[in-house]
Image (cartoon, rainbow, N blue to C red; front, side, top):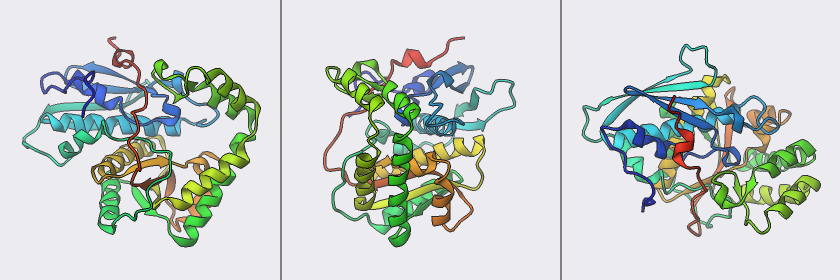
Length: 324
């Protein structure tokens, strides 16, 4: 069911698409975007005040997150008969302007994108263990087609490559947790749900949890847990792109969200084990496992959830709309 606070998008008011765009996943749930409506277009900007300088020094994941938001907007538009055209990194002096989404009346009564609409609100980042249930190859093929539709690839890791990727996840945890700056940044984004963003922590224990994260290197224990999650996941896959510039990161985000919504349509959920990509020394090693020149952008695990989780907190939509 759709949350009662989420307005149904209207074909004659493209601003009503924005709440659905803002349900996209983002690193540490930073929600690093804002939108500006101009005539029949929506401009999507990076909100770099919500960046992660240690975890994401080049804003690669920030740009991927904004690409996810653009895909949600496209799907919500299709649901109400609006056709969209996305211009990535338009010719502009504003580096924060990542895309302009032009809207027009669709000639098609129903598009394939519109069939994904209801799964925008059902998608979750599922960090727990999945059911011990295999994913049918036909579904895996659908996910790979979804990525290809947005000029990306989804490589399924199997056997030795899968084992090596799990080891790289553990090594990435060790590197990150050993870095006090990385731990401080993580602690900064641990909030009570009422804050509307970040990684949810019960409000009574939030200050204690932040102190623990800032103070202690827990890389060994976290690494073992994450390696186990990688090992037991029905599917471990890498979403990659041919090149590695900002436009490719944005396209990777669009591809990722199409994969996630397609997965959700098939009863699956996903979460991320991006440590080998976030760690500069490990990313080439993950790329080598792919036996390809493609650049790994997201390492994700997919499976059937054993329970339904609440949605991650979201900021008030008025906070992400710029009226200027």
